[in-house]
Length: 243
Ligand SMILES: NC(=O)c1ccc[n+]([C@@H]2O[C@H](COP(=O)([O-])OP(=O)(O)OC[C@H]3O[C@@H](n4cnc5c(N)ncnc54)[C@H](OP(=O)(O)O)[C@@H]3O)[C@@H](O)[C@H]2O)c1
Image (cartoon, rainbow, N blue to C red; front, top):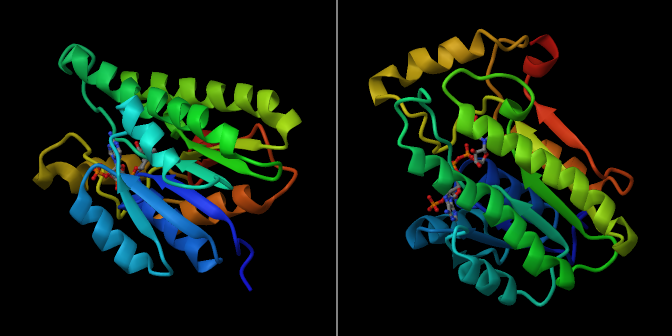
């Protein structure tokens, strides 16, 4: 018997990284998992690794019609987790401004649209887990657009939690700190990634990056704690506490 037996979980960005680890964890607890991402092969590989009937639905969360199609593919939604999207790193005067618009399209409007289509299919006891990042709480150099995005998602999550409480739907935000073993593009040449990450780790009181398993532990808590709603949970090795 798993804690999520009989639940249907939709996890966007579930083909790699944090979303994959959450999907894998939920499936191991008995949930029927549907993962979404843009690349079919990645989805198929991920679904095969997760096993337990997991399946992928090719979805670009920046396209509202595709988000609708994703939610249409399930009879109901017990758990909605929205991890899809990337990051935009770079100095404010060097990053192409269009990339911030694309970032918000995928990671803000993508998450909001998923809620829009999923809520009518969510019964009392269901839960939504949005994904932001600690830049919503603490300044990260060369990450101004991402910081704004994270703050916007945090605000959206708090507002939705109050709006949806009468329906018995809980809403929380997972706010990861530096997390390793993901496919995220750090915006620096491959040979500089090590030094880039070392510089970030130096800001972390625990002096190490988080793992995708750490993020999945937090998501599992948010999925199962019936009294947790309206929270933004920073899983960051103490970064925001020490900043
Ligand atoms: N890693 C960190 O340190 C960290 C810290 C704070 C916040 N975050 C955030 O956490 C989330 C997950 O990141 P991650 O590190 O696990 O990165 P990741 O391994 O690159 O995972 C991103 C996932 O999102 C999917 N995706 C990207 N754009 C999409 C789109 N437009 N439509 C649908 N799916 C899309 C990717 O698959 P396809 O590319 O095939 O679509 C992949 O499944 C991201 O929003 C990231 O910004 C990460």
